[in-house]
Image 1 (cartoon, rainbow, N blue to C red):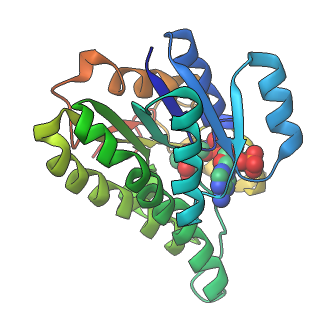
Image 2 (spheres, rainbow, N blue to C red):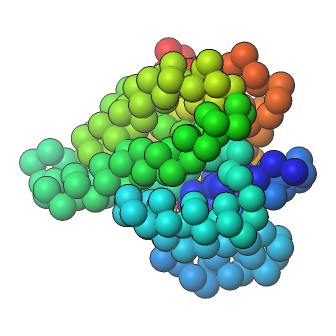
Length: 239
Ligand code: NDP
């Protein structure tokens, strides 16, 4: 049975990914960063094991993955989904807002891949999916930190894919458009209406619609797919 680690796997898009992988017979371990109540409720509801650590903490990621491998076995699938926003215009953004988003959204992917990639390579099979964003592809006002981190994910994914290709380890990215989760809660209604007006499908996406893409990219069926970015965004931008 394949072992899958989903970062930020207890809420929002990550919750849907954890559930989809569980439905497909994976043993899932869902990571989270601080919301113990949400994680416990998720675990009680689904039976999925949860583990708290900060994906921005390099040693913390190495230790957590080593502990998971000891308890459950080798990690076959990594979904780097954990992410935060700290929005502000360039005029107002602080160094801390910049640094926190880069540390969690971008360095978090490196930290986790560093923990699992060597063993995947040795075993000759692995699947890594990194969750980017439509705003990493197109930029967004008040998000120089987030857009930089997310577009960094796309370059990181391609380079990792090149390094893993000969060893049966694929790395792909998913670039979600606007998806109805708590992450959007801070966006004012008037701005949300303008955003939805720019989505050809005419609505926000659902977490399950991202999870289906992750399920494909982490399956045996995706063995020839690596270094790609799957845009799931209701037609927004149409790059
Ligand atoms: P949510 O805010 O709903 O959930 C975020 C998850 O990430 C939570 O489980 C949270 O844990 C976890 N997390 C946050 N910081 C850390 C950390 N330092 N270490 C470990 N876990 C952490 O986000 P979404 O589900 O909306 O977003 C998921 C991913 O999709 C993110 O990478 C986001 O950037 C991306 N995305 C989202 C879009 C959207 O419209 N929603 C659009 C494009 C991309 P806890 O519960 O403990 O806080």
